Length: 418
Image 1 (cartoon, rainbow, N blue to C red):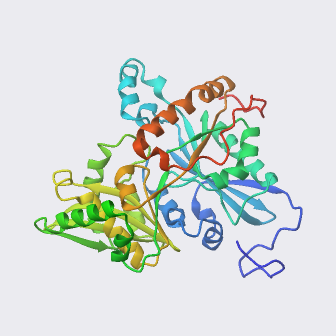
Image 2: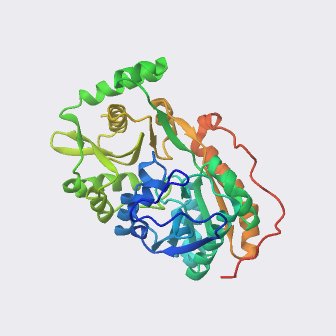
Image 3: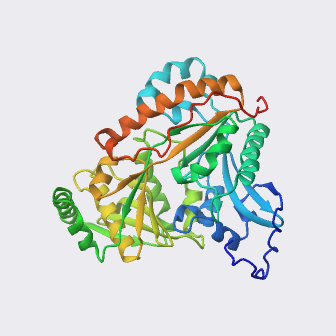
């Protein structure tokens, strides 16, 4: 929590830790173990996916993980950082790779399905960008027990692979020394897409686009507006729409390259009823029929277009994808947001929207030294190939990493065998 040095603690807060007090980690099973005021003080202020209500809804739903844990870093009696964890004891490799790799793995799945099982612990956020929720960068003596505790949780759960998922360069800069010491290596993940705003109106946003994207935007908006019965609605209480939303979402997931997480009715219903974050469903209708949606979340000056659903019967002809994205941008501008982020897919239309690419990386290890060495030798090249294929002609827009991934020889703290 952010508090002036020397100020008295607020009612209900623990006293500040004395200088030099040791750090210790406590493992919690629910996000509700963190008081709401403490969470708000630690979580990224402008990332709506890091609202406590999103994690509570994830716990209610069945998105993929078998369970969640939260590493609470304490100093004295005060929680100074939180690292969420997702446990995937039954994760299947062919569910998280691209379509080409899935085709290659199909015969192996038929012969020996168990070989494709990859028990894995994800550190960070299943649905969004990875962070350690903290008021600022942590010193090495604070990072060390968090990294160690993640390995201990993996060992107790029988999970061999540990991944710090989708962390940004700035945060990895102060995590990297301890992660390297503990046997992790680094490789690029798919980038986020971010549209910086600050426009006075949606029309001002359109005028700021380069000539060709501006013409394309106006053309696509006209095609949607002239589609019979087409209209956009912004729905804040979307619980009654959950069955229709899931039907459209499943059409998108049936075409998805990866299915690591999959939203369900329990998650959406819990999110619709949560106190935070502010959320809205951008809905496209054909008459009375819901034909597209974009789930939008808001926190501080940040917005996120979290998940989309489309009726592929008319998606292309009616320009549904663009219609809901432009409506989300309009809503974010009217809400005073400084930026809106979208998912790690469909880079060509998002670049046309004006989005930039936000670099992200994985830090990975395996608790068994031989498998760790195999991962280090094989995985970066495979992920680099997948990244190049996903970005295509937009690869040049991705900023280069501030520091090259570590390839130092292993001389690490040993992990317990699984």
